[in-house]
Length: 331
Ligand SMILES: O=C(O)CCC(=O)C(=O)O
Image 1: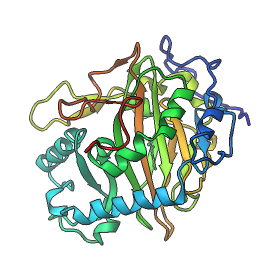
Image 2 (image 1 turned 135 degrees about the horizontal axis):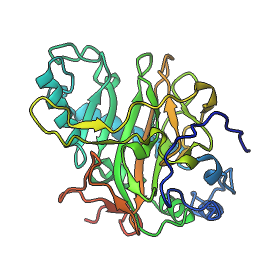
Image 3 (image 1 turned 90 degrees about the vertical axis):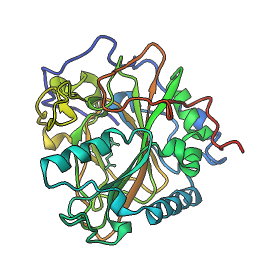
Image 4 (image 1 turned 180 degrees about the vertical axis):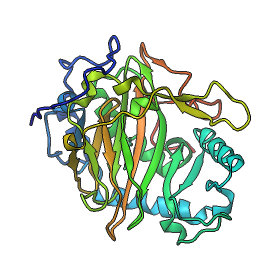
């Protein structure tokens, strides 16, 4: 399917070598072989045309259940008082910024607005309180590690002809029934900038993602024009007391709402997301939750990962090579 994109910004910045040549089409047929012996429903890909791509039944019902149970267990084991990210004063804001900035090599918990009172006490059931968990599940949690370094995932990266992809972050993103917040329109490369652009997101639906509970929306083809408004989130060079830890280089870019198309997907689907495609998700106003697991990779070969990005590799958790990392922890 091709989409006609109107009114896309003319002043978008296009970097040299910003996109991978569209002649390098991925061949997802090769991923079929490892999809639990079952064919996936799509065998050729408009990924490079649209900037996103769905592989249905990428994980099985059982695999989705295992990830959901692990998620429940992680939340059961979490003490909300140790993860106080609600803030009402400038000092508390700074603390919550620090909590985020140092979360790259940890498993940390980010609450929905309104899930805690001003003293930090939970107002809702713990299992219904979170907005997301991040950012090192892929390496610190064996169940999420298995899902991340599975051969199926490696084969998708190979079909994109990525030479040396590394996993840099992972998240469970919740949309709690009735209160799950929106994710505003953005390009992932705003946050995880590489030059040239070689960032790819894997987004796996652990529950059905519908129009009602907050599925993804995309502007098809919007990844072809670089970073709109040249907007990047970078570490704040001004680290004086009271300053935020990160800043944006440019104002919010105003996208045209009518250009977004919804992408409802069934549980078990993988949505592959180009680092520069514009996407968003809406509030969950429904009684059904929407839980997904996502992680980001970039191809390290001939690529510079910006030292201005909020997320930096650490000694404890370096960016993890996708192809050579075993799915199972060796005992
Ligand atoms: O899951 C969502 O609602 C948004 C995810 C997203 O925007 C992303 O992973 O970049």
